[in-house]
Length: 212
Image (cartoon, rainbow, N blue to C red):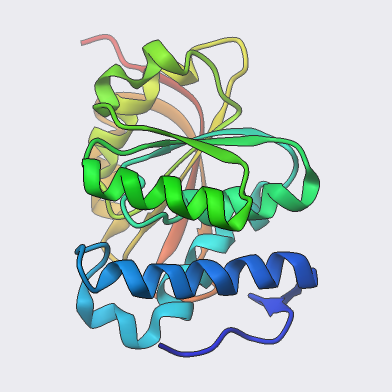
């Protein structure tokens, strides 16, 4: 597993405290990954870039003490990384939604040991809005295609808080966008990934269903 850049992430300086928390999370992840399939094993050799740096983009695009919902948190990307950044602010919160009990257990340990600001909800995504009725932002990574993600997000995004959603997508993202516009209305900003040249982070706002 490659080491982290010294006090810098995606070209931006981070505090020693945040850097230390990220390092501790990386060590913890490596231990748990030996017994639980948290990410594809082929990505572990470039772990810091593929997972830590990639996830950090989300908070860097939408910084501040916000209330997040992270869908299908899995191994903690991007939810745990966002929660670690929030720890430095001493405000904001990440609700990590993960129905797999083993992964949920890992997420709880990661939050506790890093002092990150978040909590784990071991429930189905479709039921999450009952426990988390409002948020400022939504994130998901390697979870589903864009139409399915927007379907998950609608209950939160039609509330008065008008959250923004952030989704990592690969080079074929435009096909997913074209498919989604048939069912939904939304504002879209495409942020080029600072980690993978062919990838993007899609920022969605003002989401609503089209009349069908």
